[in-house]
Image (cartoon, rainbow, N blue to C red; front, side, top):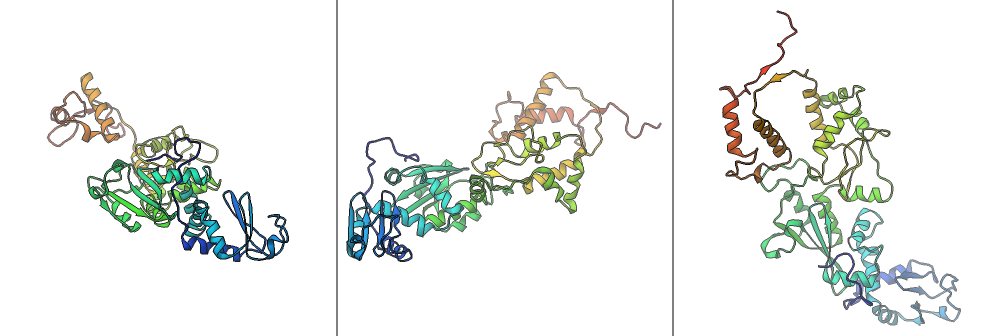
Length: 402
């Protein structure tokens, strides 16, 4: 597979491309919609419908006597439709490239920007891109690998799959052709657990969409990672509307309205904790752009994801509601008797659970603090028959009255 651009050579090995009749018909339609003399421009050449003289194309009066004019260094004038078709066939890569993005993809919005980004269409030449597409251009999007290729008619085809399945033969995966089938693929993780956050790095693999057209490829990606392309595009255009913590919490009502009570003029340390818990790259593939408010940044890194997070999501709000209630409890001091190794073990257990590493710790590896048998031993030693940790409050309960 090729990266975005092929290895540097004097002349890229551009694959042979046939000019399909649909692309040629689209050129004729585009010319018919333009004023005579107004050129239709492609990479390296232009075509104009003969008629009135036009300074923009510097066509002479004899050039515009009838038919079409093609300018590609030389000037070919008075071309019939048949002659124009033959002339454009010599420039089939450029014409099919125009056709794909102008007529197949269409709209100047997130879909077009994303598909052009996949093959660096705004930076590389048609020749360089077609040479790279012939090998396959791979791009990463979250946990996805998207591979773009080109057919001998200049059509784009896309393979969308989990990055862990990169290079796996398609007959070893579950193949799909309807992008909406992705809705079922993103519901559960590989252990069968529900995924409340679609951008969590817990996407299960074993499937592929091996032969999608441009519109379906975009639809599949947006189904797997909703709104990520749209927000990525808004950010590129300088139009990403970010809603920070305070304004998002101010909108909460009902059972979630309690989160607003967490702001007590004591700074934003509690929001740092929320962001560190929920928004780290290990928990979410988005790059957090929201802060405490317009004037106050959080002290926690926002991550490195390619697509931005413009506001606290429902998972963050729901977790913050629970933590608001828990943090409202008055702290108390407890005394426990732990050996130094047991204290380190408690730290290891918390770290392993927080980082999702429990399943990586082998049962026989009792050197690991979060090892299951070692943890069961600690529970047997420290918990009473009711399952309570056998510590005692260092302060009396209640308000201190005897």
